[in-house]
Image 1 (cartoon, one colour):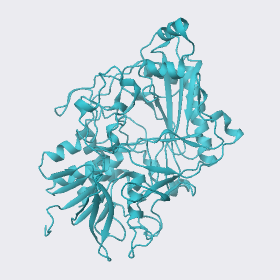
Image 2 (image 1 turned 90 degrees about the horizontal axis):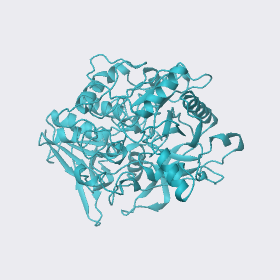
Image 3 (image 1 turned 45 degrees about the vertical axis):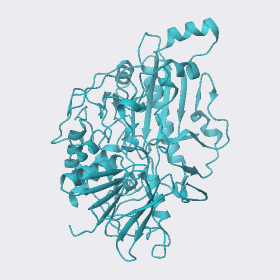
Image 4 (image 1 turned 90 degrees about the vertical axis):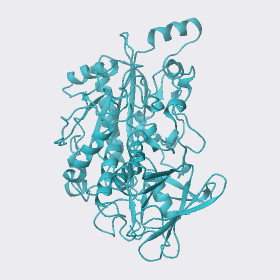
Length: 552
């Protein structure tokens, strides 16, 4: 290529989208510079699951591995939704506020080489085909400007590279040409939930997981330690660092710079991004240029960077000619219910989220509600893999009586969770906080989140169905329930740089290229026109990134 820079492409961000794009482009012979705001993690040394205090923290954060953001005031809670308040046996209601508030985690994410895939559970889902036509079929959200068939070859490619284990018989998906590893065996939680689901006429099947069911591509099989969310020290979980980034690095065409934040995109005043300005923790500034710039910072940081890159040529923010940057924010709508079984179980081990029910996943599958949901085993995601959280949240008492109760009940917690469609609304968006800045002097992203009655009715259905499944499974002692009504707690966020055909209603074209800036691309969940009915987005992000790389 005719380029004075040694790089053909700059990718900002190294999560699911950035890493998959780097893989696709380096395989095609492009020289890629990957800029990551966070640090590197060494799986062998940074995920100390063998230490005695392993349970006292979730993912082991490092300096700089969390982004900063703020929340706008949230909606007032109403008595009519009181049954959706979060609570547990030990602490009662988890929030006594009159308004909705962020949970302790708020927006779950990691800044680091591999992004949030470092801490994700590893669910690897394809979107239900009907979820890609929400506007034309149901007059909500927006249609995807591409079809499921357009993504199929890239779904196949990503699954094979990662080593996804699971089931190809999933309603609403075509798996022609797929090559999955065998599904994992059910752990105690899913065995119990499968029996309960069957009594209700529901299907409980193997969940598709980025965790190896046998050794593959030089990586070992899963040892079922139950702690995917704390980082995988063995490398059997298909996080971006041990899959896409490792493969891209083998080409010797990938240059990685960590602990370096992109603080502004510069443009030539016409149609091209001319370079990126970066800063480190010491206050030093660096600039890089390349013919192609790809943003993969996620649905909160990507719009933040574009809005902070406003100048005389783009006074409302770079790529924001339509006013759509930051709009259509979609969050994780979720519910988790935990009960105690009378049977002697070991629900603290096994593969997290190994079983799933897709029966209500289609957009029109919940009676009188548009937007689907899914149900899965969530004992690990509820952080019930060790005794400390039993004592903190589930088992009451003191002294000898308490010890006896702990010995009897540890391992008997069974959690079922639901994640549902999140539909865009005018009250949910990302903008810049005018009063709070980061170390580089840039305004932080501000999260505006609102749940209208349509979302709360779906959440109510999810909560009731979780209760039905537990009850049918023979579990009647409920010890904890929590969800999105009173606590903002999002692992998946979407939609803030929507892709589409019309420059007036979207930020990028169907490939992810900015409608105005001809060398600026986006490949993260900010592109999503709709969230899907509970599908985890990482596999779709990777498929979109591979498709974008192929188009280049």
